[in-house]
Every structure is written in C-alpha cells, then in structure tokens.
Image (cartoon, rainbow, N blue to C red; front, side, top):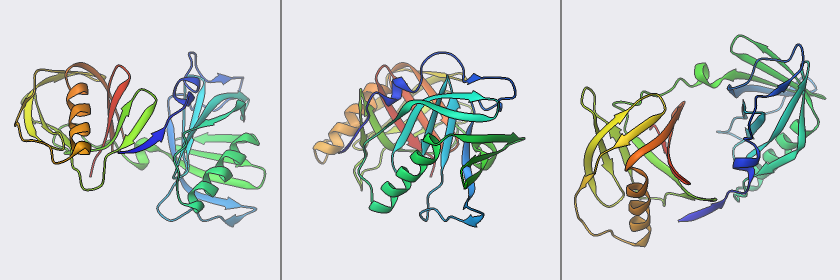
Length: 257
C-alpha cells in the first residue's frame, strides 16, 4: 500500500473557535470552494490539466489543495483581508513535478495575504496580481446521494498515515434504499449488515461476510481496515462526491464513481 505521511496538519489546522474575523469579514466559515478560473495580471493562468484549487474554511483554519498535497493553517481576517497566521503545514505526498510546482505556487499566493470577496455562492481571491475565481463546492459539485450510490474506497487512514488503495483492488460500500442495510466489498470478501444512520453518525451491526482467502497481503490489509472501521458507531461526512467514515483514529475515504 502506498503510504502518504500526514503530519500534525490535521489537528493543528483545526483548533477550536471560529474563523477570526473583524467587521466586514466575508462569511466563509464552514464553506468550501473550487476554482473556476485563475488569472495573473489579467491573463489566464492555466492550471495543470485535471486539477482545481480547493479552499475550505472552518474552526479558525483554512485548508487548501491544488492537485497534490493538502495544506492547512490558522487564518484571520481584517475586514476582507485574509492572512495566514504561523505558516502552512502540508501533507508530504510525492507527485509529478508540475503538481509539486502548483502546490508551491498556491502556498505562496496564500502566504502573501489576499483580499476575499464573497457574493452568493461565488468567492474571489485576489493576491498581488493573482485572481482566483471560485464557486461553493455544494453548487459546483452537489453531494452525491448517500443511498443507492456505490462508494469506492480510495484511501485508508490509520493514525497519522494515509494509505492509497492499491491499483486493481476494489472495495466498495453501498446502502439499501428503504431498508437499513449496508452492502460491503472489502477487497477480498463481500457481505452485508444492518446499519442505522442520522446526519453525522452511523451504527453498524455485525457484517456477514464470505470467507474467501485474500489474494495477497495488500488485499488482506485493506479488508482488515474496512472491517475495523465498519463496526458499531462511527462518524461520517459527505462532501461532494466523497464519503469519509471515521472510527477513532482510523478512517475510510470513499468516492462516488
């Protein structure tokens, strides 16, 4: 399993309190945005194909990504002027050179400070000659329905380590319509179990799974992670086409196809 190191960013960027804001600050707390266009000195600045800039605000912090790593730090507002307090922490995934360069560009833009304007579901960030036009993720990418979506496992998080699911291995999670039941594929075995859920938590009953031997150690590791999380009461978050299921310091990150 490919390992991605996740440093103290996940806790340091998410301390208590709300976004520190003075009079006239934009109302961004609890919202996430995706870029719809970037210009530099009035001219288009294309991003690496297939990537977007993503910004999220909440609990006094900002999170940011540009196609490779995720950055985060404390954020303050003086009116519409945004500043990063104490620098940005980042995950440490190795990516192609052009994506690493794009990460560095976004970090520099944010650390330079920026003016933020919010109008309806649109946000505009201006930093020196750079302007990033963005749209609220809820309207840019509406949440996929929890029920009747076959969620495909992307990432397994165990403590401070996030592991990508190996290529060619499929693990899925789906919820029945009209019946409180979860259908699970672990990467080795398949099965189902009773589940109850509300807006933020799920409670799984015992999963009844087939007992086929896993093909290799990677598949066995994914199955162990899935069965460790999908039991008892867990927290979950649905954002766009991504579903994160968390139990203690372990988590499963699924995507909608």
